[in-house]
Image 1 (cartoon, protein in one colour):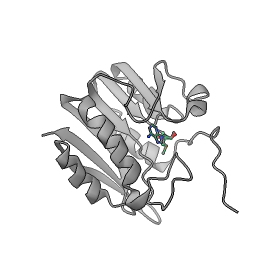
Image 2: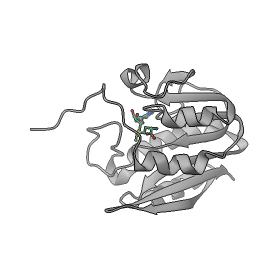
Image 3: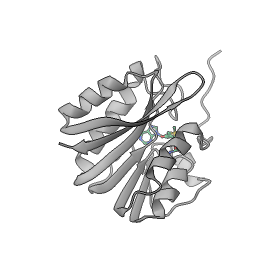
Amino acid sequence: MQKKFDLNKEYEPAEDTFFIAKHIENEKGFSALDIGSGSGYLTKLLSQNFSFVLGTDINFQVLQNQTYKTENLICCSASDAIKFEFDLIVCNLPYLATDEILDIATDGGKEGFEIPKKIFDSVYKKIRPAGKFIFITSSLSNYQKLIDYSFQLGLRSQVIAKKKLFFEELILIEARKL
Ligand SMILES: C[S@@+](CC[C@H](N)C(=O)[O-])C[C@H]1O[C@@H](n2cnc3c(N)ncnc32)[C@H](O)[C@@H]1O
């Protein structure tokens, strides 16, 4: 029988959360956006160094009961409901390569590209000219396809860090406007 995804269950901070956190904890600026806020861990971290911080998540139940409470939360896909340009956008993407989307917290669809592409399509106009978008993916996903796609949207993406885990490598990517 197919396992049912529990919408009430937030994604607890994990290796990928801490990996991205380590690389953004010293970032500073006026505005920051955390896409896929989940527990709120990264959104709260951003609140330490940015004056205006927004978190979004597609899962309303999760936003209502966040473990790490933050002030400005919007329930929408990626940044679709927002008309603003940010200094920094971060996202711990649902990046796993999966045939179907059974768990919205982790499943990225075919090649781990389908959901990240949606997020890119939404985000690329919300980055300030000198701003950046930092996101995480995996060696098990076709992240080169995502890097190439970002170029079509007018972004230059490069790998800024890697972390080896038992069965995969976490890949941190920074995208900037060309
Ligand atoms: C891997 S979890 C990351 C949670 C948290 N940011 C962290 O790093 O621990 C991904 C989160 O993205 C949310 N999500 C999935 N697809 C989304 C979309 N299209 N737009 C916004 N949030 C989405 C999920 O509900 C989930 O909370």
